[in-house]
Amino acid sequence: MIGITMGCPASIGPEIILHFFSDSPFDADVLPVVLGDITVLEKCARDLGHKDLKIVPWNVGQDRPLLKKNTVPVLPLSSLSESDIIWGKPNVATGKAMAEYITEGVKLAQAGVLDGITTCPISKYALNQAGYAYPGHTEMLAKLTNTKNYAMMMAGDRLRVTLVTIHCPLANVAGTLTRQSIVQLIETTHQALTVDFGISVPKIAVAALNPHGGENLLFGREEKDIICPAIVEASAMGFDIHGPFPPDTVFYKASQGDYDAVVCMYHDQGLIPFKLLHFEDGVNVTLGLPIVRTSVDHGTAYDIAGRGIASSSSLSAAVTLAGSIAKNRKVNATTQRKS
Image (cartoon, rainbow, N blue to C red; front, side):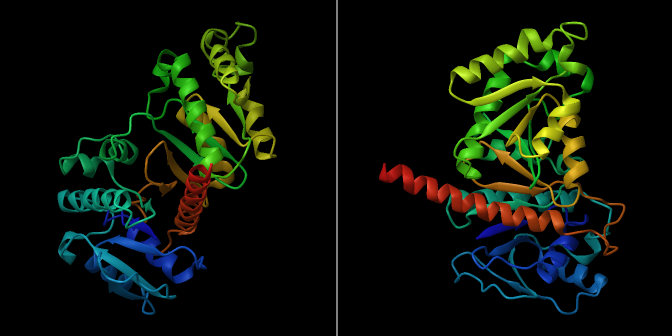
């Protein structure tokens, strides 16, 4: 059972949830349940003309809801009034509500009620306005689960990337990179590929920071001083690791199946090629957490909220991947117990 947190109630979150339950073919082994607000979803259904959808309450302790087409089971965690919801206009009330969906989703996943969570987009500004001092979803989840070593992976059928630095100014990236942080990310990426994705011997590429991989120190020293020593150390630990490769070629090779993931030095280095290939069906996966967490790979899209044109493709892919990871983790745990 995968809990879908509704995200910001004023965003496209409610909309893509309704599209998902209306349009997506369901995996009979994965049961999605919305963690959100019935009033908001009912308003969204009316505004978008989803007359075929039936939104039904579900509470912990009841029997598992039945998976029925055009039925949206909802664990009600907020009671916003319709006057609180203006599409595209977040406020303190919506900020507190979206934080509650995340907090309760983590608790239910830790308790085993949910096998994982898939998160719809939030507004970092509204989150902070509501009193939650986190730079984003990932950091909030890490805090709630007491996780120190975590990472963001963007995953699609053709390409997977992980990021050494995430929300870091480009001017600060080179000074932020360390051998230890790169080795840690390689280890975290390898663990996720073997356990969560079921790849027995994953092959990982590392992207260089500078053009042409530094061109023999002509364009920078980071490859020689930091990235190469990290690759040597990771290789000695037994990982099938390669690079550093010039960024203008490594993503093409990975997309052709040469590598199972690319470790990237900074945010846009990995996300530009990833979104070029997986703009609509990409999935954000938080690695290192004790719970399964996937997310859509897009933001709140306040500019189109409430207009009925947002795609649910990424949400559908994220729920499917959350179910797959949860199954793989159970298989891995069973195998470890037997051995």
